[in-house]
Length: 89
Image 1 (cartoon, one colour):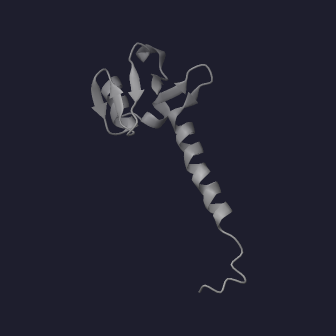
Image 2 (spheres, rainbow, N blue to C red):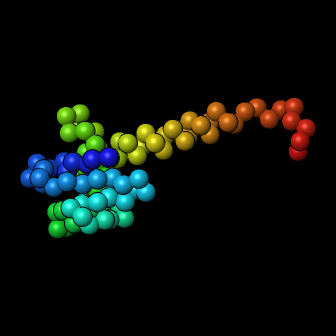
Image 3 (cartoon, helix red, strand yellow):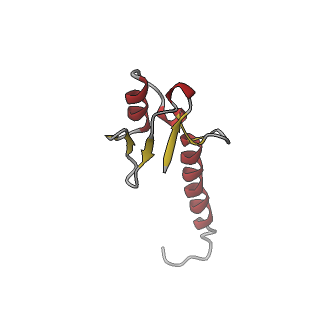
């Protein structure tokens, strides 16, 4: 997945979210979004907000992460049922 720096001054930098979750920035592979953002800006930067997955919609990588985590919370809620009547215990 292509990632775009939020700040236009870094718009020329290409970043790619790899299948294993690492981020490739100009051939350098980084373990976290913040590590990748720091490689671009030269200073500590919150990568979850720095990278956009959609520039026009201004949808940040943190939004994708939040939606992903919320999907697990919904799945857990659906799996938890009323345990009354369970005789397995």
